[in-house]
Length: 145
Image 1 (cartoon, one colour):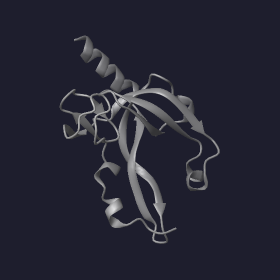
Image 2 (cartoon, helix red, strand yellow):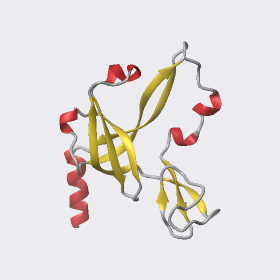
Image 3 (cartoon, one colour):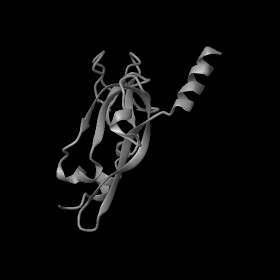
């Protein structure tokens, strides 16, 4: 398999959760858009860095993956609704499939995605991890205060 060109490896939104915000209607989108799907404005969109915190609204566990992901099986993919509003598909990491549940809070983390080419160029990108109980309890108690 050929190596990815350097310009591809340096694309900022491969390594950050960059979306867009419409300055006309304040809608936030991921992935980035050039036209606002809500108000159809052009040129009023600005890059917006998403915090990467949200909750699982649906998920599936892959037990028979394609060849490139055999070392990760089983793994879980989830649809995550970010706090800012957009929904995103992401892999759940640092958890067993049995620990994944609808409604659990997650946060985006930077992780190894794969390798490519004879020199083994390593690709990194975003995945999501479930917030632990201590983090969730701290958030809930601060919201009550």
